[in-house]
Length: 174
Image 1 (spheres, rainbow, N blue to C red):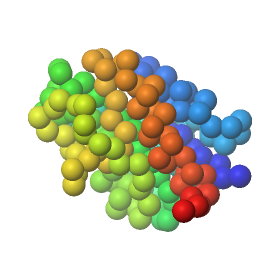
Image 2: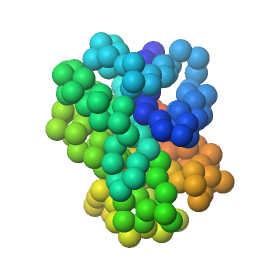
Image 3: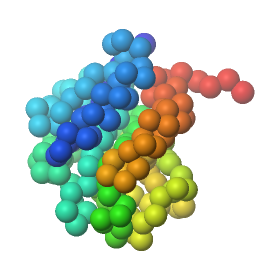
Image 4: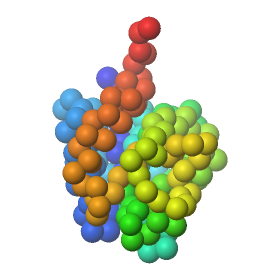
């Protein structure tokens, strides 16, 4: 069975909470959680697939622990790994930077040669701009715990149904 590393940065604890919700959707031992504050390049390379989660802070910035983790991320050989992304943002308070950190992280990972999965429809969101919005969809699951927390569980379930088999390395019949 493939081992998925779920790496997250958190500011208020919401991203950690969502990471734990994701882990619960997998069988025991399939997902290991890593706060990027203490994660290493070896943690990254030891996993068959990866999930990254990040909040967007201020005017569209990465949280400091994730920004500090980028050199570690760039030092690991991740080419060919399957990676899914999720990001938290506030579309009402920051409509011009909604889940920008997700877009920044996507851009960094794409340069590392990973296979990104899990784009997400922008239907049901109201924002002006987002670095995570490309080719008509978000580059990963976009969540708004400030204004749409009631939709998080449903969105997570639907997104995980989409990415789970790819992350586990299983082929979908049909």
